[in-house]
Amino acid sequence: MQLDIRLFAGLAERLQTSVLPLSVEGESITADGLKQKLTELYPEAAAQISVSFVAVNQNYAPGDALITEGDEVALIPPVSGGDGNSSVQEASADGLYCITDQPLSVDEVTSKVLDDNHGATLSFVGTTREMTGEQRTVHLEYDAYIPMALAQLELIGREIAERWPGTRCAISHRIGTVDVKEISVIIAVSTGHREACYEASRYAIEKLKQSVPIWKKEIWEDGSEWKGHQKGPWDPTLPPPSKKSSLIIHIFLANIDFKTIGSNLNNEVTISFESSCHGITAR
Image 1 (cartoon, rainbow, N blue to C red):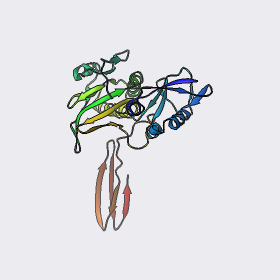
Image 2: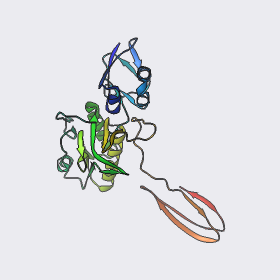
Image 3: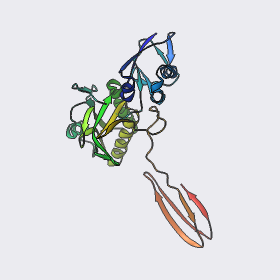
Image 4: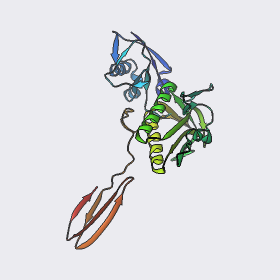
């Protein structure tokens, strides 16, 4: 069986190709088996291969998924980085989701979600910052697996519509070179009320950072590096990380009346009591 494996970002750079031909014995191989075979053939890229996910026909594949001849196969490193010189403008059929190497317009993206019956509209704008700690960024370069990235953006939109019915969402992401202060991503959301608008916007950016195959390369004055948003094990098939904080209060009292209130993003905890000496943990 003959497969062509699409590579991106740091993996493509390390192996010096964007398409890797691979001969496999038999009529199929599992996603985990493919990664193992690639690790054996290319030990110099073993660390990057091990943390990457296999995508089959533009969908993330579990380890036991079977790959057969004719499948579109890609190895997806932890997302967030790349560059490109030709003009690119790819959009979903409804025009709500777009990947382009041209400058992004907040007004243009936001106009796609405006609704007469919505009282809240929120636009999240991601830009290139100059300083990260002591490191000065000259510019960023973004690369993308465009067909799958668009499909994942549309999936985010569907998930938002399911979680917050009636919500409208549009997302545009830049690829290629993005200079300091220039916009790399715009997420526009509109809802009937502001609370759902904030929640849906946050969900969109967290999910995008986790699962959309777009990669970022930081170009510094003295070097460069591909960046992955995640730290530690990466699984793009999981729900996005929750931003809810869990408040833990340890209270030790001696013959006093006491009342304390703690809060996180979505709830409030109130504790009232009289005590001579207690140790209490409240969540």
